[in-house]
Length: 236
Length: 236
DNA sequence: CCAAAAGTGTTGGCTGTACACCCATGG
DNA sequence: CCATGGGTGTACAGCCAACACTTTTGG
Image 1 (spheres, each protein chain N blue to C red):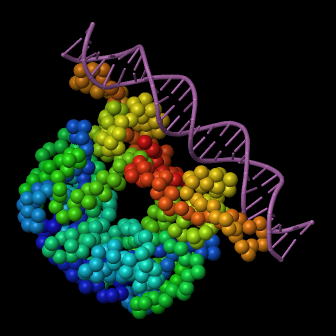
Image 2 (cartoon, chains in turn yellow, brown, cyan, orange):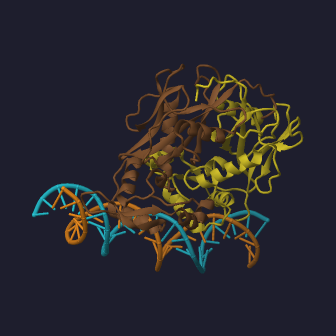
Image 3 (cartoon, each protein chain N blue to C red):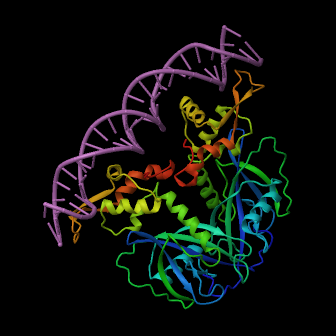
């Protein structure tokens, strides 16, 4: 690798696929571009990484600048390095994804000017996105769908206190299939990482459901062996 | 993302973690560097990606230049973008991995001059590698260990015709644990993607074992549904 | 005939899945 | 009292793990 002397004639960016769950729908964060190239198109939030920040730090910074969210547990997704993916020159992009809790979210007001606005868009019926962002989104969506079977990522999307029905409907939305209520509850509770709260749902016009909390400490305790490298984590 | 005008002051490289199985050991391909930086160190094979090739194509080219192997099913692993990972400037590296069959392999003679030699080294007791290559290797090894439980990657490492005992010992080496012979065979054969050949092992001083072949066409047929997105593939 | 590895079944426990009805609450 | 979702148990099937001896072959 590092023998042909590097030419330093390229740039790299990060692009973020940020998932949220709102009104029973899975959504991602998009921006509307106000500048060329792809002026007026919808795009994933992203930007050029600075020369003096790691790509992980850059991803966190850019996410913060676009959403005000700090310390999000973002994860690297994949790197897209097609020759012509950016019209202005060679820009390789490292895609990240995150799952965030967006209940009680204030309006999103982009800090940078190149985005006319930032907004949540349902993943169903996503419009065509700028650059290769549609492909990036699809890669991210496949990843979280698959991961949902192994890791407790659903709790990142839900409010801190949730009902089992909410949890189930989130699984159903992501996996795009119906699940059996009794089996789902039995399995979830059997893991032992859901903490039943003394409270109940309020303001509903039917029997109020129990609220639960995800106990990450217990989760780590229970699954530490398997996460170490056996295959890891619960399955839906 | 692509709004701050790109500065084109960076470079990116690829580094390959290439696994092979030889003499009952899992090995990876290393080079010995003959130039600064990290002169005389061992390193993963890699190089700077050209301005006019995609990173995937670059990875294939570099692998070919170092091993003579074409059309290897390389896969992207992870991108490493620490600020100071390369002494000469900002070089982000995209790591790839591949699992290859190396029986009857001729000697490896690097085509490029910056590598004094290329050789297979057991993954046990790997020396400290140049740059952040040790971390890259560890990421790759974790990945294949995990993936072995879901995908038929073992067959990429074995000769085309193999015995069930060879297959089992490969699993044992990668997973670093003993497996039960009867259960292993029962499960492997139950999948239905192993084709029993009319031949047997030759030249052994004990009862000759049956030879098998991996039937990828059958594998695809059997697992297409699950690979589509349910969780996919066989488990060890 | 000996050494070395090939090859072969059964059982018990656990896990996933299919399936339907009564309960509590607010309006 | 009705509409709405909350909440609950059982039975069957398939999968995994544990476990030990006989067979074949070459030397």
